[in-house]
Image (tube, rainbow, N blue to C red; front, side, top):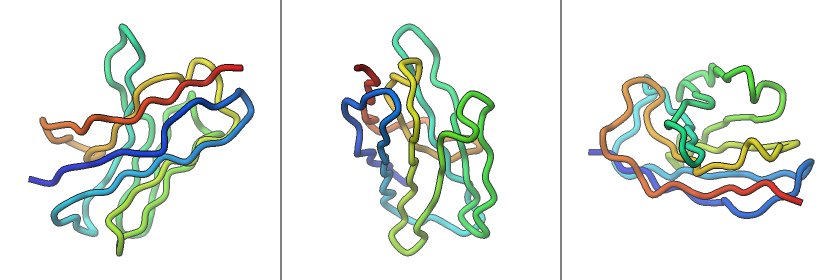
Length: 116
């Protein structure tokens, strides 16, 4: 089963930028869709953005459109999430997984805290 390792989180000020990375172990196919999710304390885990590994077609939830950019490097089996102009409400643990029908097994995620 493919496993995902997230990295790149930390403390960022509102208006700053941060890039998250997700490295996948195992086979990732061009037909796969990869996604970034986030979970704030007391909330459920929700999809933030997803990308088709071939062609790069993307989808974003409305709350992050224009601020977040998802990208991928197929050769490295890595998916990125560039976060520009973060807001305090973006504070959460960020996870990656398949963007459609995620695996039941999730990685540890990476904590992102947006605060001045």
